[in-house]
Length: 286
Image (cartoon, rainbow, N blue to C red; front, side):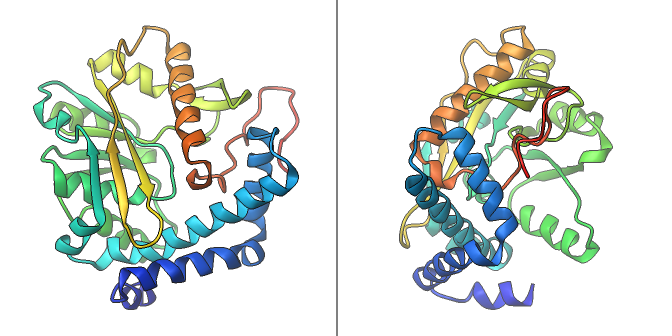
């Protein structure tokens, strides 16, 4: 934490270059994560040559290096500095104008952590989020503090279940839903993602149906150089949910595939997205 406090004083161009350099070193310094990214990209982009796949992994690690270094700003920088770095795109006040429940769909791109200050600084509706606690209590407390510095925020531990989130939604908070990780087979289905059955949470369609929620994706893009972050409020899903949770999950995965293809190097490839397999299928990772 002391290191991050020191880093946040750096000029943003220097900080970005430092993060880009650090990301280049992750190829050798984080071999397990590099191998996960290599496997994911080989699975999802089989049409790329081995040379192009390697180039994509190397670029991805550089973006991840930047995200690590620039996270210091999220922890310690002033609201004024963050406002200068965040560039809003799309209808960011849709939730403010919506009387009923709202779900912000937040996919795991490299700049995902910038959603919290963007939502807190540029619109008025509070957000309710599920988080996985850290084993280090001091780090856990600091992470929660950093994510709740601006705006109204409720954080619910994943092990607490869905009821606290439902209460927060009924109290007027928007639900920040990041459903594109593999959390195991419970309450999930195997939905194609880049043509591969991926263990996908079915909660997006279920919650939208049971609570009558408007579902609006929020996409974070790290901009090259020292230009900051683009936070895009995408058009809400139309005719969603459909009443078929599997079809709804497929729609979310298909939408996400299309977004990833626009900026593949910034997706969160260091996560074992295909870790949980259908019964009888072998692991896709070594």
